[in-house]
Length: 500
Ligand code: G6P
Image (cartoon, rainbow, N blue to C red; front, side, top):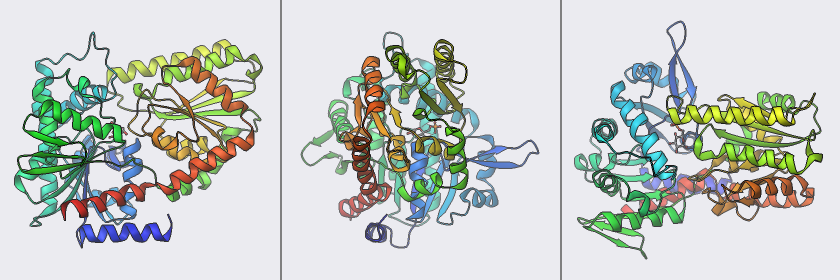
């Protein structure tokens, strides 16, 4: 970040916050507590784009970060100031607090509504002829789990605001759609924004679900002064959804505003990004450098790399099908390329994720059995949450494969162009939010198009070094310019301007 960008962010923060802290609320916090064998609590970094991006915000603005107590350890830590201080680590600017509900309540919110229901809905991953089935169990989980968790978040936020009549609060993502309304009831003057990190699908998708749920989501979000999305299309889809399902709201498509009961909500888009310096620092750490050397292991092979949570929307299976097609159609590549897949365990208590994981493992085994030769394993799979290793993998890639079915943004694409040491070529889904900013330098693929993805991999592997360098330099400049401070600054400035 340049000194100029730093100063601009500082100025925006001061004019929005004065001497307040910014309150950020997210389901997943920067760390989670797990009990070690000896009964003590250990912290672990959360995975996923949200934590990656927001973890850096505290470096620029003093924040109170309210996260859900997701584990038993978190619930214990929630009431223990010493542990909470430990969780923030050396980052004195972050004050961590938990919104804690009983385990069954949390399970309903996270494992019945947020992930299998809202996540699948918004990523359009349902096989509609069979799912979803909105039965009494879903309605109960919505009311007693999701809404209850949002109420607990509202209470935890309000507990941090004390007598401040205009606290500045940013709510995040699909776990917290109804919290703003609950906060607003108690603190009508609060400055509230909500940012959705995942796609916002067209109204026809929302049409499938129970009106009570979609209306509660819409009303909840209209409790905010600003609602932010990753792309202009998602922001537009949101306005159309409101026009379709909230009869007493007036949508102004030119002004990007929604008026309901004398309140105005501004609809904006802010593509999220990474902290370039922090990413470089971790990728340049001794541990990451050593790991990069080990991964290369003296090979002269060209390396294809992917990094993802083990997640159905990431389209990992079709990525392997494309690699298989590549080896099938280009026999001379056999023995000369390697595919390193760094997959991070995610939502392991959900059946869909377990099933998907088994299919991924099978696909890898099949490719290795079919094409492997002595001394050459076509695919190497790493299944762990090791951020430094993942960055090390990205740094040595010749080709980065990012082919999600649909993705709010996808920060791996942005991390990859920053840490690449080999002028990697980026193969990127047109349906990732990141594509809007990266279309110029990336090789585009349609996510279901396995043949096209295999062709794109072949093109990337054969691309002259000069062209790779030119494309990467352009992508890198884009990410450096539109980094996490840019994302944050624009939101802070909008909040000053629109709520001032
Ligand atoms: C995505 C979501 C985040 C979520 C992350 C990891 O990036 O937008 O809200 O935290 O996935 O998922 P998890 O369920 O493990 O928090």
